[in-house]
Length: 543
Image (cartoon, rainbow, N blue to C red; front, side, top):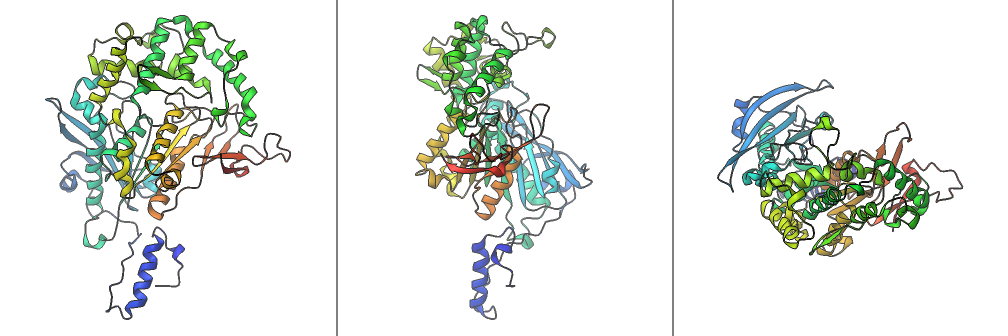
């Protein structure tokens, strides 16, 4: 070997370089012992043309419908391939899971699959930034025909099964096979090349990543899991909030009232996390006091208690939402107008997301005419437990995510990076904390878990984005995950960013792996006048 240091061989684990060096030294002229082959990190060029006829044989049973070279906005070209995989059952029907894969002209043996939130149902646009960095990009509609928040397609249980678990698996298998064929990864010349496979998704996309790792542990090497929808009772909680509002229209809380609550919380608790910075980093230190309760009528207080305290109905539980930034509750849970709501946009009374989620999921499971507003009672154990059981029957993978199911993924070396906003207004941060704690217990403690999975909490960020916190966490998480998977370096921190806005300055956030928390060096008093908006003035410390 040359005099280049071990740390200077990019993308190659130190153990491989040291092994190669030792074997070379012991082998003398090379005839006494084989020399370990260090995998090449050179970019790969295509070995096939970008056409359906050339690529179809490598599609692993998928049907290719289009293939063409596309010029990106930066002038670079990539091969875009569209296709579908036909699935069968469990109903007496078939379905098509549509996918896209985009392959750059210079490939660095990294494959990226984009998970989708909500009800999926669309083909994601190739990420030109990732393509420029040498990634192959893939994604699918997960077998769902309806984007947004519409799960009525589940009346066809074949489509439900695709959305639940099969769609991501068959589309990732097909697109990984296409990438392998396009660059000749199975050719003798590339015998030492490994294609690293990454998944990234938030909300429903985070659920997709967890399901994939649980059921198909060989599909990906690293998974970014943002604010995952991992608990069926998250949807039941949405239904409980919506049903309370439908039954008690006078309980509706206006955006102005939520802004007043947010201002009161910030005024009292801004410094409780050790910094006066205009946001609440640790919502566990926050509670609604008597003066804040007085801002609301008794009916509104009843609604707030459901949202903050969570649900515990006939054994079905879900933790409440944090008080990190209540302003976000309008869009997700309360709506911009009180009930009755209307699905006609012209009426100006569209329902909140929580209503749409529970309503369309219920109709997909029980039939298109099922109206939970009139037929479901949270005072009836048969309704509550029956809904939970039906969901687990229709979506068995999503409805039964267990920490033990991740063991095979971790045992083969898979890494998982969780992140969740402390002001999440759609999925409870507390529930992700619960799942992560259960995962730590199953893996023998936090120290052992941190070698395979980490959780980063993001101050001020709402559901997958929005709010006043960092807005680029997923983009920052991916390179950290890549370094962990390929070089064995677990991330000690992430840096998230918020662009300047009309009312807020630009800010960088130090994000720490749980149970550590970011601590401001200046403290509440900040006698040295340190810039609280600069991540360099914060440290990760054990809480």
